[in-house]
Structure formats: structure tokens, C-alpha cells
Image (cartoon, rainbow, N blue to C red):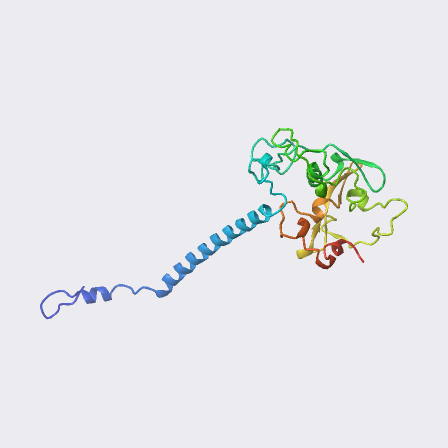
Length: 242
């Protein structure tokens, strides 16, 4: 009840004073939650923007070429009607080439790890860049990025990374750091590199592939689209003991 003032009216002051006082911490907590939510939204937006910047600033951004239709992702990926039994929602025609390896024997593309085969579907020069979405293209990769099908002048991949040719070249590495995580990785933390699943004469083995060292989406913005920085040869030394 309110109290009667000298004029006989019920005073509102006492009624208000009976209400529980607001806890100033409640408002502060609400503002903190709102600030946290806004911060998370900003981080997600920033991450998306950085990911977009990585691919859009890389050599895998073909949107400026007429044959791409102004698309960045579509020459490689598609959300619908992707190639069956190929991961990554793949949209580009696959290479069927056979490669000359360091050991002197031919290795078919089907025996490569899938990521390396996807890379070589442009970089071996046998499939046009614009052969995607079911169409047959006519624009092939330029000389700088064209590895060809003779890989004997490139870093060994697959079983060739383990079995040296005869005679062994002077530059051939003989000592390697041990693998981790059941033989699927080398190194640890920020300098960890992943080995790839290869079909080695019917047996799956984890060996060096294209994406052991390179990332197709330019993650990290390093020169040559390497997975980690190779300043002072630090990427090489993840695997090689020198």
C-alpha cells in the first residue's frame, strides 16, 4: 500500500519504492552477450571474405577469361550434376594420360591419388581448361603451368618419391623425417603436411602428391600456392633431412 500524504492522496513514491531495484549487472550482461554475438558474426564474415580473397587473387581465378563465363568456382566445381564417383563436386573433365616417372615406368592417371589427378587434369596439358560442365574446350594451359606427361624433371610423387631411379641422381634425397598419424602426415602443427592415398599395385599407401605441397585455393597466399611458407626452405625441410 501507498502512504497518505498531507493532502489525503495516496503517494506514488512509496509504491515505487516497494518495487525491486534493477540490477545494473543485468543490463551489462545483456550488452556483453550482444557484443559477443556481433563479434562472432564479424569473424565469420571476415573468414568468408579472406577465403574469397585467397582464391580470387590466385592464378586459379579464371573469371576474367571469356571461356569461364565470369565464374571463379565453376571451371572446377558445381553444386549439381557433378561427375559421378569423383569427390569435390567435380565439374571438369578428367585426364586419362599415362605418365613417365623417374623410375622409367609408365603410371596411369587412375593410379594417382585423386587430388593429384584433379590437378593434372589441367596441368598435364592433355585436357583443355574450359572442358567443364560437359563441354569440350579448346583453351589449354600455358607453358609455365604445363607439366606435360613426362614428370621426370619434377619433384617425385607417389611411389617414385620412395623408389629412386638407377643410377641415383646426386640430388636425390635419401633421408626423411618420420611420418605421423598412422603414416598419413609429416611434421606437426603449422608445418604439418599431408600425404595422399595412392593405389600402389592394388595396395593403398600414403605418399607424396600434388596437394601435399600445394593448395588449389591459395590458402595462406604463399608464392606458388604452397600449403605453407617455403621461406628458408622450411617446407622442404618438413620432409627432407638435410
